[in-house]
Image (cartoon, rainbow, N blue to C red; front, side):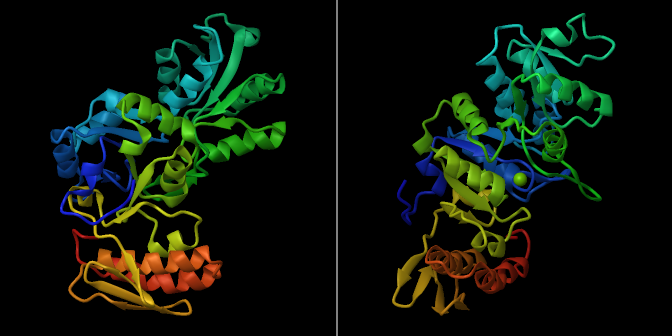
Length: 353
Ligand SMILES: [Mg+2]
């Protein structure tokens, strides 16, 4: 859609939202400030919301319980997982009831079953299916997987069976830091097998297609909201959806200018979907947004925030730097200049961070 400043809240241009979770709705066990209330307001306005998650290890009911626990509206049917997208992909190419090796946790097993397939683990209780009866492999993160599960998968995949991975995130954030994510375990098999799976989770389009199906909204009237540029924003662009990049997660303006992405909107937090959106506009030698103005000498950024909030200055600064990026300016130089925008956000008091 065309983006115009108006008195209407940003969300008025949309019927549905594909919402990321960690860094957008919650961070670990805590709600992102204002996010549950904003989601309640949107649902009360008649906006459809689904939560799209690459996390394939948990079942949707468990994810929905966490969302509802912080006061946001959520039923299990509002959660779209990469395991469901993977199971749907396989259900489209296999006979109903076909046996599929569930190389993952409960989320993978349940998604296969719900898609009309037969999840098997080829453990001691494989129900007599045996290797010959298995028609495909669905790989998602499972924290109880053992080396021999990967050996079984390798044996099946060597025979050329279809191989779908829920997601290829290299890391899994845990309270102490970064643990190997499903992508690391995909790489482990890929290194041995010299083939790679089809991947359905963000930033790949199948998860977004499933989310649209669940919402029942058209792509031009659906907004994808996320905090990670490499998954949420790249994925929205690949799926042909408008995107709102929220700054409550890990990625900062200096990460955006080093990427290839241009989100449709840049927001302090999810709650800004309920406010009018001030669009950055170029003027002679600079960019304005709200009351903020940014000028560029070469790539050197000069920011006058004026009476505007930090987010308006950040939008103006990003508009300037992204237009230089698209003209081929060196990424490292842009990243250096964008650190002034990172600081603007990081120095602003909560809850606007
Ligand atoms: Mg996230």
